[in-house]
Image (tube, rainbow, N blue to C red; front, side, top):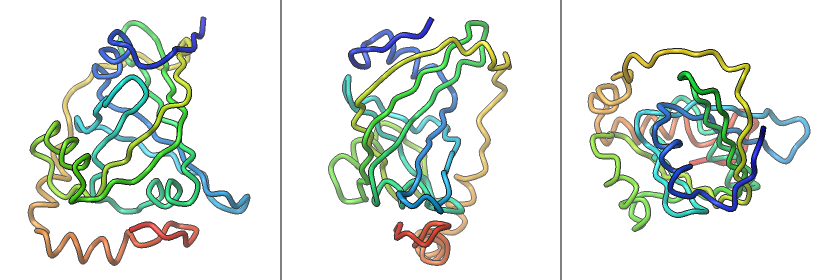
Length: 179
């Protein structure tokens, strides 16, 4: 059934790359804080090496992932196969935030052209990679990516995005510092 991997080899990397979306789980240190689970997609994930993944963190309604990673680094990334072969892969690790102006931000951004409004790159240093059966995940067909965030960010422009981030992305729901 489940398997633990030594790292992200070429076969696992190809499978991960084939998935249209993934989920990111983080939590604050406080027991009163909220656990966060965010869906991601839009061709934003890069596999940097056998122990490192990263994705463009696009401007959004909140900044929970950034706030939790800044506070404690704990993060899990989960991929689910929705096609004929059921499978779930989890990458457990330590996250870090890379901001515009950094070479790694530029690298990940260049690997995923066409995105507008990236506010950061989330990097995960993978400590454990494993899979499980995925038998409870429904089989579904991929129709298309949603083209909503790009036109929204283009309409806002650089100044509008900065204003939006200042109003919506400076702290988490629990008041932790984010951007």
